[in-house]
Image 1: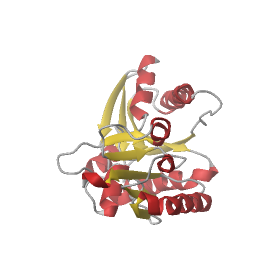
Image 2: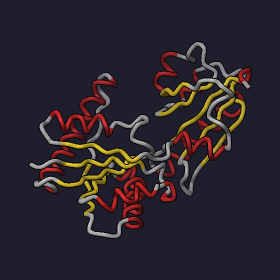
Image 3: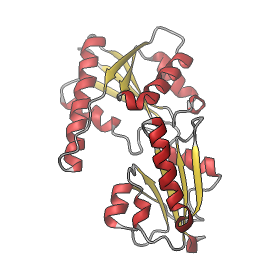
Length: 254
């Protein structure tokens, strides 16, 4: 098999206007774009990708869908994620063999940016280890953190101060990190902000950022935490899925 040029294209948080010109060019230059289906509960996600393709593609690029494997939950988290990535890599490899047996340009549309809490680059490495000749190209995209701070019209960092990017799992298990006044929290499926002392902490929360049904809440954590939990549950029930992120900042740092 000849080499595969794999283009991982950041597409922002679901708003077609987030696409850069570089993203549009890479999509139209691709021979095949792979779109993952995540089940009926997340049909909005595949529909958004379909809409982006229908809007942007002007040439002969083929759009091929595949069923994304389901991540297990019975074992240790990192082990289950590792197995899940192996299964996704197999899907990609199968698509390469079927769709581009003589090599060519393959593209995947990545939510946000491929560099930030996304495993597309790690999965691509698995293809290399499987013996596929691969050249990886990344087109950066608008991240959920950029969309969050833009929606709230706030800076990500305080003047000359650091920001720690972390996950809800780590915040829940390890608490607030020492020496840090601003936390950007991603991949939080269980409202980990409820587990920390809320005094003198502000939160800026957003879900479906950049989409028509974008939802925002901001204020002192002690006053708005319950509202966020309730709103998040209602939105997830309405849509069958939710993507959200938030920024926490100690008020003393202002």
